[in-house]
Length: 297
Ligand code: FBP
Image (cartoon, rainbow, N blue to C red; front, top):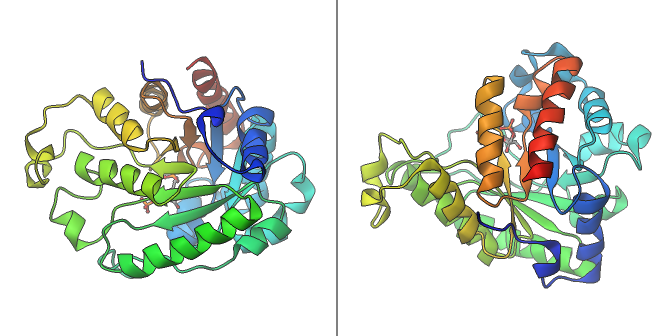
């Protein structure tokens, strides 16, 4: 079984190490593992994501879930962090997401501009900053330059960088699609090379009807789902890997996915909709199950 990268394996500044220690050992499942609750969907998808569980439209709902469920941290953009975190200081660590975009334009030249800064993250007491990199988008030049500026600021402040590494755009659509192994594997490697301390990845789709459109050698690769997960974790190198939840799955399918991701050497899970699109009692119940899987992995 692949061993996850550990905090001690990382050659990082004392500020980054202190903050990552808080996220990986002092909150959440502990022992170097993590379980984060993202709530940036109001920006990325719009309020429609909250219809499944109307309570979830109020960010205090996710904060209550994060506090009672013992999460390693919550992900907010600046507006929600400023307006809702105060009551939960010391109970729920913050990852401040500092770029974002709506899903109103197409993905063709996806780019997420900054809506906050590393200074905002420091001011709000965050323990890490989140940045979405749209690997392979025609807007990648701007994206890579923007990320480099953010990374330099993060180094100055000793703040960890979590890259949401999401392949997007017509280039990737023509090469097997955004969830192909080629795309996710590339995204993992790219984020590591661009300086991510943690990388948030989607699960690669192995049974992909467009698999033969992938570039060599991926187009002929015969690989199991478990091996594909382990491959992308390996490509992330000395960056810690978090897998996304995706849209709502059945309990059994979601828990199976969590189990597979952790077996592949991931550091943790960062699932939003699969957690908070449920009433609190059910959300806490599935949280307990996910935490148990992460802890024993
Ligand atoms: P989910 O677990 O709900 O999928 O959240 C993970 C996440 O990365 C969010 O942070 C983000 O808003 C969303 O997925 C983006 O999903 P997509 O790129 O599929 O629109």
